[in-house]
Amino acid sequence: MGQQLTMTPQLQQAIRLLQLSTLDLQQEIQEALESNPMLERQEDGEDFDNSDPMADNAENKPAAEVQDNSFQETSTSSTAENLEDGEWAERIPNELPVDTAWEDIYQTSASSLPSNDDDEWDFTTRTSVGESLQSHLLWQLNLAPMSDTDRLIAVTLIDSINGQGYLEDTLEEICAGFDPELDIELDEVEAVLHRIQQFEPAGIGARSLGECLLLQLRQLPASTPWMSEAQRLVTDFIDLLGSRDYSQLMRRMKLKEDELRQVIELVQTLNPRPGSQIESSEPEYVVPDVIVRKDSERWLVELNQEAVPRLRVNPQYAGFVRRADTSADNTFMRNQLQEARWFIKSLQSRNETLMKVATQIVEHQRGFLDHGDEAMKPLVLHDIAEAVGMHESTISRVTTQKYMHTPRGIYELKYFFSSHVSTAEGGECSSTAIRAIIKKLVAAENQKKPLSDSKIAGLLEAQGIQVARRTVAKYRESLGIAPSSERKRLM
Image (cartoon, rainbow, N blue to C red; front, side, top):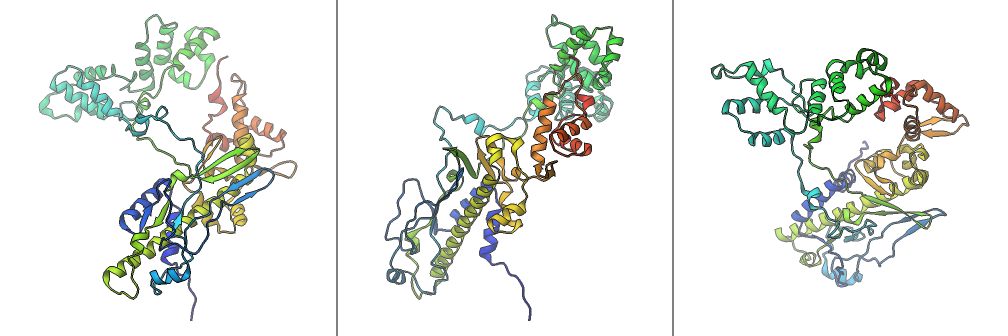
């Protein structure tokens, strides 16, 4: 004798749908519609016939609402048209292994996203594919007149240019890679490289940062102020510029502080990674699962109807299922009917769970919605799991690759979860709020004397937030903020 936990196919399907992103779920629904004749979409404005043989015994219910003084949740109850028990029994065999309490029709709530009219619709931004740097350079190469040998060298050089726009291999290595019978010399390879370096974007094909900046400076008008000083700076003193040793630069270049500042400002207009200007990846789209908006001092939460199509059981095909018929065709239709009902139920369960979790997140993070990152409260999966009565693993699945559309932007649900740090008053402050405060302090600092990590920790402690210097450094690095020595600027 023993006990074991077995996951039914219905439960496995529900868990699988729960962890899918919106785009993956749309593909899953499309595959289900193509493989199961019992499933069909409900088009906008379509009404269901009261004589639907597959409708359950449930009356139409209005949308449920839960609200308090400053929060309101709007969810959608499923609608179905129904038959009497007797008529149901006459149309569907008793041995059909389907729970008749399940609903054949499920739809999400209306979306608050504005519809795109013809004037707002930008076709190219939704259909264009990113161009690679190599294809962009090859297109320019096809327009340049040159011999077959030089073209072969140019193609090889272009293949050696990385995504940042720099030549990865040395000219000696590239030259050694050619067939000896071609008798290609190093001077020929270098000459072709100089032609490629005239292509767009400016600075392409450079072998170092200094050469990249120098190539860009050479394409500027000769009358540009401080041109010769900027060329000398990127050619001879690029290391001192990188270490921000301004006193050494002023002494060796024989410039005053104001003059050096103008030279550096000219260099800062250049792009140290010219290849990044060419977008090589396809655009990624994020479809929000949940929409949050404010109405009359209350936050409204609703599912995005446009994210998932509305499904129902096809009443005509369901009516073909016959009583006491064990033929292969009837068995197939009965199994398809059962799978269709399971799929609709799993989809309904997914959306209901998503709605519950999103509701609790918004209720907990009202301060963020009203005031921004600095008002973000500490939140962990256990808090939401306890509030909705579910396991933490379920909350983790719901919040992965699910997005919320708010007046402040679109955020992944996991964004609202963060650890906490104790305050002097005995309270708690979330790590997201601390990052926002650090970002604000750095933005307002004196760039001639930037704040060190220890100084930032002291300023946070003055606000009652107890954070160690190494923690400040970790948060600063996660924000992509350089250390104080690299943030120093000439005023």
